[in-house]
Length: 113
Length: 116
Image (tube, rainbow over all chains, first blue to last red):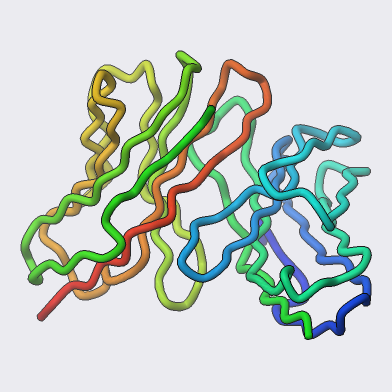
């Protein structure tokens, strides 16, 4: 049982490049989400999904796209990276009906030059 | 609108003493959940404790307890018998359940330093 996995752990991009941050969970959770964490701030919700084929925007969705074709995977796409997207990105999952905890991945550290 | 406020950017506590980390929230949803997470310097997010809005008793998990005061909209974390390993960032979070969006929001965190 791997829990929530994220790849890569660290990535450097140049402004304008695109990339996909991968997130997978093996707990059959309906709910998955992406957060970014900037210095001195808490986690801010980017996008979330309550099941395959269903996604919605969070607090800071601009510049990011998501899709959910399977229960297990929830990739986050940066179409044209900007320095303001330099951050640590966390993916998380939880059972919608048992909300006692949200399980987090180890995070991806992204640097946009 | 949902809001979580943590007013203590940093706290110090002596080893073996108890410490309270403050969290206030704002919501119009009658059904919600409150969470506390720990983030050590290694960066991972560790779930500590959960309180549902309809729970009559304060949640406890080992040395962690959540002082839930619904009328005051506060959900303070109490750590008893602090240990050096408790030094970390602590985040309060909330999820509204009735709206159907299941969005979580987080506070800005409190950095706790346990002194030997």
